[in-house]
Image 1: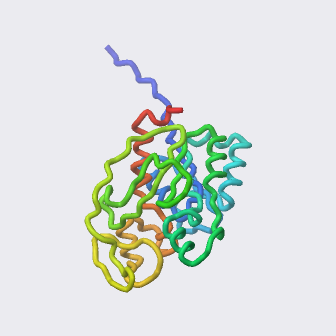
Image 2: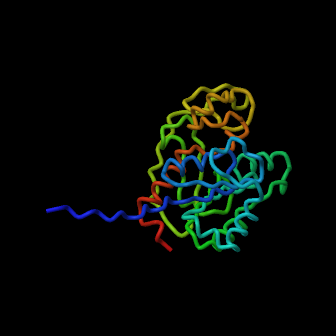
Image 3: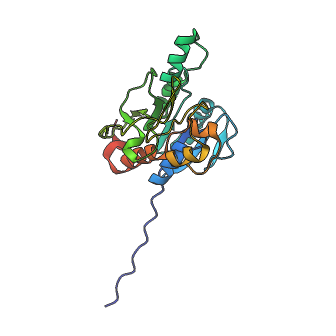
Length: 241
């Protein structure tokens, strides 16, 4: 007896993430490795960004996508708004030097627009005083990387389990108050004495598509967003209100 001819099923569209304030693509690459199609937005020229991107103000772009309904093409939105106003390094430096109020904090307006999308979202910020929920805290030791680089993530309209926070294996290599320390991690910030070479930064963070120091020291390692993207796709988080 002849076997029935199977009826082809339409392929399920790949999930799509909008990568706001994308810089050189650390977050975007992680989402791509997790299985997302990635579109970036950044106000600066980013020739090293490895995915299609729109050059322009991220919040203006997001507002346009909401007003036109084009935001519906996305499954998830990731935002890494400028963080210099509240990050721990800047806060300490500003206090010691009498500075203050010179950096823009875009977290609140970013969240307001993300809430308008009706989509699940992620807001990423470094350790410091940024006013986000620390639903997740990820750092390099969790992924076997050569940086510590703690980053906090607020998850909107979905949730993910908090991974165990592992003990550090030693110090960050470099000078502290005139003394040179050795350790298993490199300092992914600044240009002072004892800082790693570009090649060392690339290896430590798992980034090989840009060799621009300024982009490397601003990036998050792709392993972070790859883990987040995988959690989003394999849990019930995407349906959570």
